[in-house]
Image 1 (tube, rainbow, N blue to C red):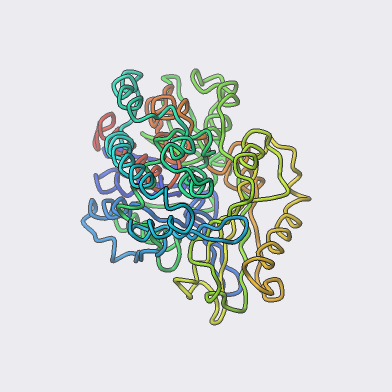
Image 2 (image 1 turned 90 degrees about the horizontal axis):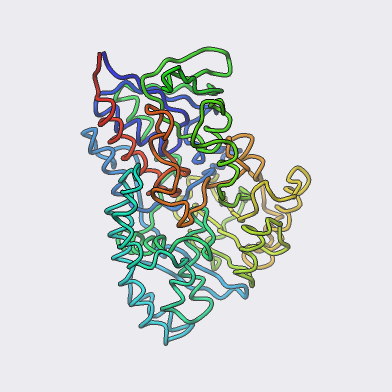
Length: 499
């Protein structure tokens, strides 16, 4: 009898795990609360404009290739990836910019405009990131870390690589100009971390980007979701939309025996995979009386990533002749103190740093002819803060639009045809994310590898986790790595057929 696997959610971790396990011969069924797949990569469509709800920076394309190759397919037959040049245009608070790509000579020319003395330091920094990448990604990202000895074995390497330092202090050893330090240390924010707290292992993102580039999926990130859904259906998997899971039922042997849905029906399963928010899954889908490891107290004590305010808007004019590129980072005058407001004090500051995505720079199909599609993201505190988002969201969005109009997008508000937003309440109420966190558990050293919630539940041997909250962490390479771990663990503990 084939092993039946039930998967909660349809984010990239779930889609990756489902495709891999289907290719191995398992029966896989996915259950999605919303009307479309993607999880955080949900696609919004309005008046001819299309907006990617979540991840827009595509790195490590080989990880997608691997999923399709495993199924005997070619990724290019399902969606098209194109390189972005530059990777990012990063602006300081005065509007001066720094372009970043994979060409070291070009980067040296950019560094020259800010501090020529930092070229040699940047070169040394990049040389060190190769070793960090080799250990942190190639060797460890797809290993499960279920035993403490797994951590002990790698501890000498982590010490040698200075993983006790945070990303900003690690970069600062090599780069002296304050703005350049910001340019080379903002990456943890892409995976929910504060550069002043996140372990320097995440400096490997630089190497990952330099080696394989930053890409865009034509048609938007949603085209990757569509391609993976198509593959899952071709492999015999099924996906149920508008189907919310209320509970993971645990039997007397402490095994997950299936899923209870909000409509009262029960779905039996041999194995359960949750791509839902890990803290939410444990706290609200499994009775606390059955949980020994992730008690409510332990869940509350973990540190969670910031949340996001994301404003989507479409205009009836093009802005591709302005100083903006496809991916833009706009940094506030404040850096460390602003991040402290967000992560530590959990207050909504008067200033902000922004990630402005202009996909129509590369792909005009995301807007009606002559129009432009935008996504602007501001890191904000999660819901432990006191901000009343029901009252604040519209005015906060207005403030961001006024800033963009004054500095980057002339006459913007007269040309907006579509506007919508998501905020911490959306992450909590729609995406079932604990505290409205956008990236689940923060990527601190004390919440990484063995210290991070495990891919195989400590309490329930046939419950597995993929996605941002488990090892190795958030970001597309991280969640796709978690799907590899889940596949390997399930093949080890629950071979494809059993009596």
